Length: 176
Image 1: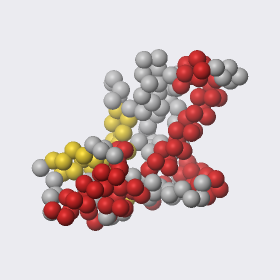
Image 2: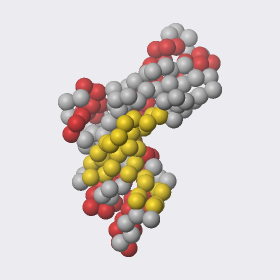
Image 3: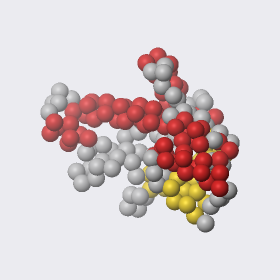
Image 4: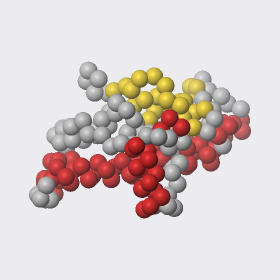
């Protein structure tokens, strides 16, 4: 059996709990938007989420491999200073941080021309930009006909109380 779970966090947590209640153990593929430890895996019960497979493009604050990572230290420093009530295990918090860093880059590219037209042009002109919370090998690229900034992911499997990355970064870009 395979369960392809494409849902929002609340319903992903409910599905994980229900599967455990009824003893159904398929290969569980979970979309990235619902892979947050703080808003999905923890409420669903860590024991219920074992071996679920998802994909990531951001570093996971729960993963000890990033404990000395400069980008993760910067993120955690931001939380401590500017958002102490933020749940570092909630994936939407690190997403928001990365998105804000990307917006700063767009505004830098705008220079003094902060018209809507130029902001949109610069947002569609990001080339190999990286925030320091992206996984190694993941880049942000946009173009006049390509508004999806991230097209690379790495697979991950839930083990214990965290996600473990496996395999190489995979890309949806042509030739990537």
